[in-house]
Length: 562
Image (tube, rainbow, N blue to C red; front, side, top):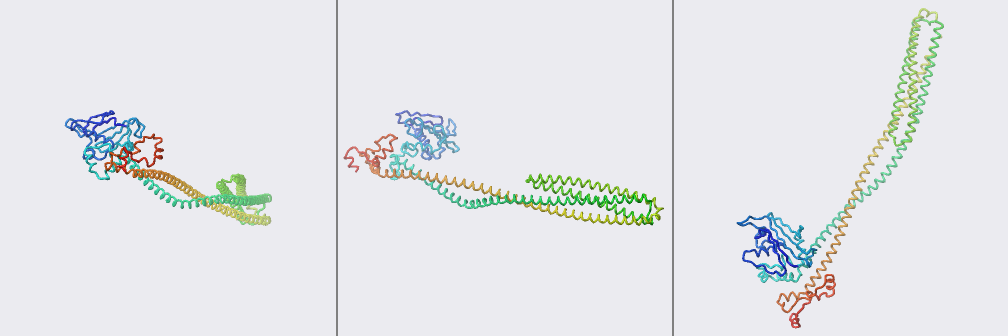
């Protein structure tokens, strides 16, 4: 490896781009005073990473940028590129040439490039640390540095000797490994703290898991209770429908009985009218007979209107029953089979409703006929007013007949009252059934809301558990990786300690060099051995401490060193 070329642009006195080629064998750069010879060495020192402006013979780092002259203005950037021949691969990089570039702007920004790729100062130092090049190495000795070496303290002189003996790089590696080890310790401590924190957070999560499991058990129990509740509600609805059907049949029978009795009364009235027409007899006092007959007809008319009104009420109530049964059908939509049976029963109720409507219409027609008959009787009474006295005896018999008719009407009224009472009982039963269905429905809705809430909480708890588990797994992986790095760093530290021990054992060499015994000591045994890199570790293992042995010219020199 050797310095191949140096390119400067905007650096100190080199305003224009200037390239210097250093062919093999070139050892000296000469020139008159002020031509820039020192600036060349400053450029080499600067591109290798020097951070002190005083070492570059300036007050501030911006002083390295060309500041202008009477002939041309200042530039805004300084750039130096150092090209090294790496055909022997001394530098740990797979390139035959290695170009290191450093730029600096007047804004204070600085950047490094290796073969044109943006890099860091640390990357440049890592490449050069095994080659003996660098800003703090003995490869660059600037003006006045010899005096400082001669007047330096023992510690500073030892640092120079260690640098020359290629020991400083191992010390730097040791310090770097110690920093990495300290960083590993800190990461391991943080991982342990995180692990303890996750373990602490895991305990309440475990309790939440227990709660979630209990919630699932309660959910299963709730489903069973809902099914049982639906079965019970369906059974009660069937029983209620059976009772309603029985009461409906009773109502049909009562209506049929009322219609039958109304027909009988109508037929008896027709017989009486026919008897009056045949005999042409008139009863007692015409005014009294007319009043009694009008009262009788009025009561019959009132009874007819009452029966008609009751029939309408029955139709309305049956319509309400139909709407209630339809609502029950919608609420129990999940019981499909029972719904079909209820639909069939509902169609029967509708058929019965139609029959009841027809019966009411027949009652209405009969009432209209009774009104017409009453009007006909009024006309007949007006025509027979002159024959009232002749029909007195017959009137007595007719009075008895009317009395019987009144008794029958009274009985019909009693039966109508009984029928109305039964209808009221039926309405009360329907209301009770509706309240029970509403209560069951409300309870089912509350249970459904509680179930949805329990499921939501269970999902949140499960998601929290999954997140905590993932964090714990990540922390454990980080702890395991930190332990591996700690083990590797410990092994490296042990190796460096072994190197330090070897260095301490080689102290006679250092003492000889320091005390002026360099004339007797040629070198170390390790300097004479040129082993292939593939077997270098094997040679070190075989020779061990003997590598630090001193090589002298003869026995007298050996006795002098000893």
